[in-house]
Length: 338
Image (tube, rainbow, N blue to C red; front, top):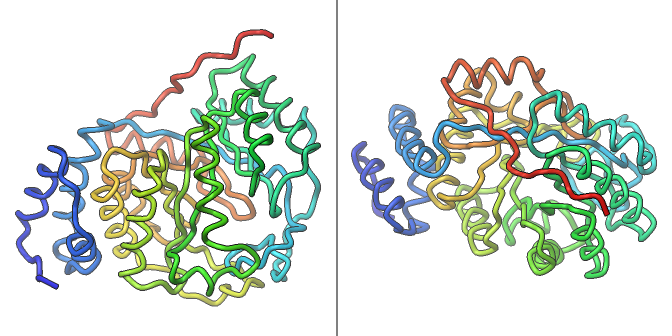
């Protein structure tokens, strides 16, 4: 691989990307191996691209764990998995009223997107109907965008979600094809790709991302970035493993903040016009360097995650304001009464 060492090359590359150039895998890999003294230059170059497409706006998303635990899958990172011994709450799908009430909480946290997430391999038709009914009520009364993450779907279930007003569907690739068998064996990488493709075909905006820090190589991190580019995912959550005690990956060392910043910059260069979201694990991996991540990413979750705590909304608002950035408002209006 050609060594890329000049600081100016990152800014030149950013200008080429803005003009329509697609970075190569070699260039993307070079971003992950820069010396520490080059990180700020790389991040500044990534910011040029981020600013071109998103200015200084930051999108906030709030997640609700609508069904917790009781999952038959063996994902090694997940505290809700059947192989996990982590002491997490276990409950069936929350009531329609609770899902609607949590949407109001999302609004109070200044979130533009409300994410409804269920554990499990796939939802039942009854669960789809309950979620759809809640979404219809939320969309009649708020301007929130709704994202659902419910597992594998049938075409009929996807159609029902679209009819209810679901804007986006999330199904993460999580890791590279080559590393996938080390992380999960109860469903395949291709199952995940097919679910993202189904969401696109149904008319929902595809959301798919990765969890970094699960033992993958730099080359595999680049592979993930280009796989998401090939999928044309509109929103790309970049999770950093928060190793939960009781899961197979519970003893894994977290990434350094510098590694995280390199990954975020690389993801911006490879997927320049896409929403890059700093997702789970940012508080324990980026730590005091969280604000710097927003020079590459343009979106974060606000509040807690599925089974782990996040930073307070007030701390996130202050972080955004201290950067001179602005919280993005939702662009959707409420659904008309039927």
